[in-house]
Amino acid sequence: MWDPGQYQRFADERGRPFADLTARIGATDPATVVDLGCGPGHLTAGLARRWPAAQVHGIDNSASMIEAARQYEQPPGLTFAVADLHDWAPPGPIDVIVSNAVLQWVPDHLDLLPRWMGWLAPGGWLAFQLPGNFDQPPHLAIQALAASPRWQPLLGDREFNRQAGDPVGYLDVLAAAGARVDAWETTYLHVLAGENPVVEWAKGTALRPVLDALDEAQAAEFLAEFATRMRRAYPARSFGTVLPFRRVFVVAQRSA
Image (tube, rainbow, N blue to C red; front, side, top):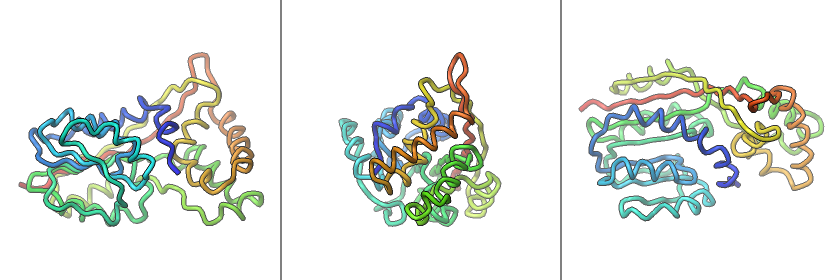
């Protein structure tokens, strides 16, 4: 189960890519805005503040995330609902679709993008970002531990997140659908505070499939092994622990 509190322990670091992404959306007065995979809703609320005249809808498949998000439903145009991205469809054209750090959990997500473009009104905007750091120590450690004799019987059937494709691949798919596309990548150097903070970071995202599959004692044992590896991979410095984090961004505008 997703834990909104754990996810937001690094709210500033997780929110920065959202801000960088949505800054490139050129919509001035959209009527309908949808945040697909809205999580705990605080970033979706920022979209409602940016476009106060719009109907802004946050969609997420986690009931716990939506429960946390509903605290932000004070503006009359801001709503949240539980739904799966594969099943949800809008009742009419959308002016802006945002999806922040979600598509890495969706198998074959390239196939979704032309469908999402088809939901846009003429001149509408699609903006998404997702991590591209599957070759970095946290993910390599999760994969290696899950495949080990100790954990394979418990975790062998778990699906871990799949990460971003190459930015050029997203550009090709969306340009072929008739969009004007801006695609780029950025590696952030997050400076995290605390004891072995990369473990706490991963507990909010990449470790969710592991922790959901294990009981409390098993989870503690797995985390201890994972923590040892993270301490070696990310040694603490005098000012904090540096976590390099690559992300891929795409902003596409449908032809008017």
